[in-house]
Image (cartoon, rainbow, N blue to C red; front, top):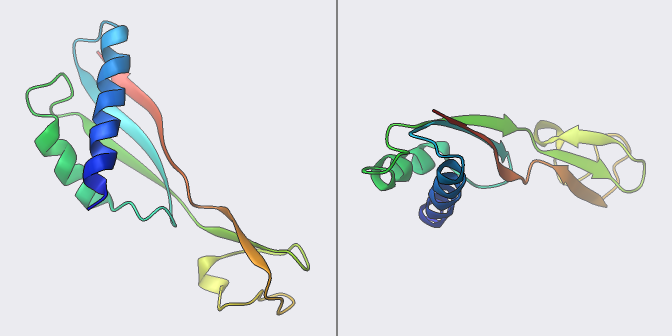
Length: 113
């Protein structure tokens, strides 16, 4: 359900920048979403389609670039993805791991006319 608030902010940001550039229409938004961000593409698209109606963003396409999650072991420095994570580092068995990528959610750019 948090996609509703995310979509509201995304639409506000896109409209503000498009209007500042004297855009007639927003064609597309390119989003970068990390695997661990918990943003669901379909939910974001659903809210976008509803909220953008009647604005210059109506019918704008949302493009989703997914960034895989990445962990790093604090003990040996090994980096590995979610598929290799079972609570410990697959390289040394260490239990001190941290997330180093895959939590982002950002608007990379807006395509306008």
